[in-house]
Image 1 (cartoon, helix red, strand yellow):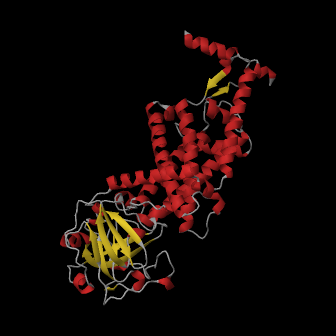
Image 2 (image 1 turned 120 degrees about the vertical axis):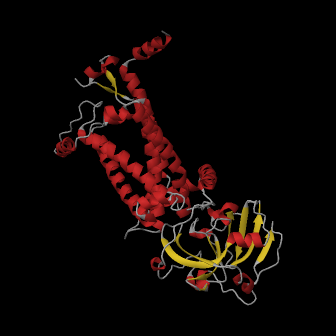
Length: 252
Length: 210
């Protein structure tokens, strides 16, 4: 009967007083909501505690996507007639700032948890078993385009150089100062290709000469171009956009 | 007014269960975040020939918009799941939202447009309200599924195919957003027109009208 006593004492209060208290609570809630609304989206996002929550959620999303990733699930492939023409150029700089890499002197450098770290020349890379794919490139901005890339399965290359396939990450450094990294499960996916050709032609500079890592199971910015060096590591390497706030896993 | 003040507490009636009130406000917060951040993401690659004003968006830049969107999506989905399970398991939907009668809904909409709102008893939704609230549930579910199709067009490619592929899912996601905004706007206008419905979504109770 204690509970009823409590209710009785509350209902003993004059009705108007309770209503006033309720009104005050509404007013207070309304005011703090108003204060929140006064902050622009930008200021709110830059607030330190808000930032830390958003970053923690992004790390959680990395884990959720790693868990959702099915290593045998293939990205849809398309007929060549579906290829987007012209395939859009996209980078963190404008088209007139594209870096030109000298193919004759080019050597791909390897480091980290790799047994055979001998640098690779282009003719050596071209001599590896090649395959092609026509897949959809999906940009983090939302647009998408279909293209055809050819090269060696990244898994074949990693096995050939004796990479530690149990390591966590593969990192990339590019001629245009871009850098990125991916999880090992995605690196070993059958459609992850180290590509040297676009539409059956040697990659033109705007598509990443001399090589682009094509990953149809990830967003476009996770497909580094102009790769100069790669390394296998257990230490999270981050990336150009990832360090600014794009989600690291960014799987499709 | 004074006469109303002197009425006994027995004249209060329960309108909204606690679960519905809590999930309503969490949903309102999540929808606000999803909408404002979604508009920021839309602006990075507009589907149509317009952009949303930057001041109405959340995140500052694309990366910020994405962070908000992919954080609040968990809140929206988890809260929506609690609401749906509650609504089904405890007969809330059956009691409050069913049956839907299209003709009656149309009649109520026309009545409302003539300024005759049939909403004296706040515990019973009229046909137009039932249609709108059920429609909102369906449209938010559509937003969640088309959103998943855009987020994971490889891992969830069977779902993405249902929307006509990746680009199709983008269009569905946008159109569902537009319908949702329309329903929410009408909802807010109705609350402004019948203000005594507002505190009931916080306290859960309303005075019985005699």
